[in-house]
Amino acid sequence: MTEQLGEHQVAGGGEPNMQEFGRFFLDSVYRILKVASIYSVDHNQTREAIQEFLPIFEKSVTALDGAIISMTIRGELCSVNGETLRLKRKEQERLNELHGIFEAANIRGIAFERGMSAEHLATFLKHLNEAASHSSEVEGMEHVQVPNISISHGSPSQTIMEAIAKVNKAMYVAHIYIRALVKVRNMHDQVRETNDPDVPTGVVRRILQAISELLADDDFTILGLLPMRLVAPDVSSHSVNTAVYSMLLADRLGLEKQTIAYIGMAVIYQDIDRLVGVAVGQRDRDAGLDAHRQFSANMRDVAQMLKHVGGDVVSTLRILLTYERGCKYNEEVGRPFYRRDRHLHLISRIVDLCRTYDLLIQGLQGYKSRRPDLAIQYVESRSGEIFDPPLVDLLVSTLGMFPIGTMVQLTSGERAVVIRTPAPTADPRRPAVRLIDAANPTVIDLSDESYHHIEIAHSLDIEEVTNNPSQLFLLT
Image 1 (cartoon, one colour):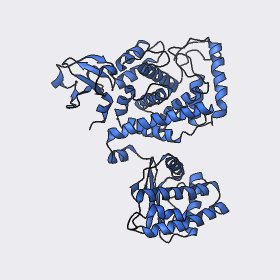
Image 2 (cartoon, helix red, strand yellow):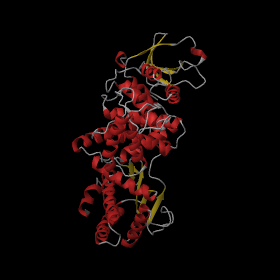
Image 3 (cartoon, rainbow, N blue to C red):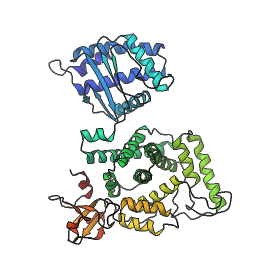
Image 4 (cartoon, rainbow, N blue to C red):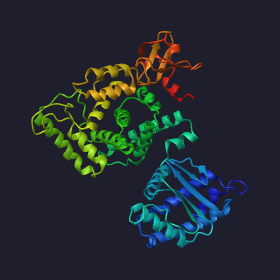
C-alpha cells in the first residue's frame, strides 16, 4: 500500500492530486476501521492493520501543508482536507459502510495530525468500537480525548439546509429523486436474480430520510417530478412514487420525521416482497375473496415473510401491510379476520390510497394511464366506498384539484405546468403555474387578483406538450 501512495500524491512539482489522494486515503481509512470493527483492538489483525497504516499516514501528512489530514462525511459525500471526492461505485459502497460506523458513534469527521503513534490510533479505535456498539456507559465520543487525533462530533447525515447552501435546491431535489429511482431499480434487479428479498437497503433508507426532510421543509418540487414519468413506468418507479406520496400524507398528519421515513421504507419493502411472491394490496381492483379465504391467503404470505423480517419497526409494518391486504378500510365481516366496526390501520389506509393514485398516473396493473387531475377525480369517486374519506380529502387538499406537475391549457391561450397548489383559503381551481415557454418561463399565480381574467380551461397529456415540462422545475 505504501508504494501505491506515490502514484496518488505526486502530480507535477510534488503537489498531491487531491482527488486521487483523497480516494486513496478514504480507502486506507476504510480498511483500518473495517478491520477494527470486526476484531478487537488487541487482536493481531487490528495491530497489523495499524502498523500498515502508519507509514502511509506519515508519508501522506509530510507531503501536505498543515501537517494534518482530515476526513469528513456528510450524507453521501466525503471530503478529505476540504476536497469533496468524486467516487466510483465501489468507493461509494465503502463510504456508505463508513457512514454507518460514523453514524453509530455520532461523529462526522476525524483529523489525524503529524506525530500520531500506534498507541494513539489504537486508543481511538477502541473508543470508536465502544461508541458504535453502544457498549460504553457514555453515549457518543464527546468525552474522548486522544493526542494528535481530533474528532468532529455530530451526525454524518447531511441536512437539507446544508445541501441548499451548496447547490441549487431544485437540482438537489431532482438528484435525490433520481437516485431513489436508480437504487430501487437496482435492488429489484438483484431480488429477481437471487429470488431473495434480503438485499442491502442502507442507501435507500438515507435517501428517504432526506425526502422526509424535504417534505417537512414544505418543498414540493419532488411532487412535480413524480407524475412526469422520468423513467418508463414499472414496479420500481411505482414503489418510489408510492413511498413519497405516503410520506407526504404522513407528514401532513403530523407524524414524526423518523416515522415518516419508516412508512416510506415499508412501501419499498412491500414491493421487494412482491417480487418473491408476496401479494401487494390493490383494494380497488381485488376480486374480493370471502373473509375466511382472504384471511388464509394473507396469513400464508405473512408466514412466508417471517424468516426475512427482524422485529424492527419496518419489519412490523411489512407484516401489517401484508396481513391487512385486500380488505376495505371499514368493511364489516365476520370472524376470524376482523371484529365488527374495525378500521384498517392508518398506515395501511395511507399506502393503499397512494398506491392507487400512482397506479392511475403511471397506467400500471390494469389501470388506464390518467392525467393527475383525472386521477384525483377517480379516487374522489371511490371515497367512502374503497378509500377512507378523511385521507382522500387530505390527498386532494395537499395535491390540489390540479396537482403539481399537471400540464394545463389556460383560457388566455398559453400552455403551462402547475408548480404550486393554492393556499388552503384560496380557490382550489386556481394554482400557481409556469408558462411552458423556454424563452419566457413566466410564473403566474392564478389566485392573484391581477390574473382574475385567466382560468384553467382543461388539463393536457404529457404527449401534447413539446417542451419537457419537468425541466421547468429545475429553473431558478
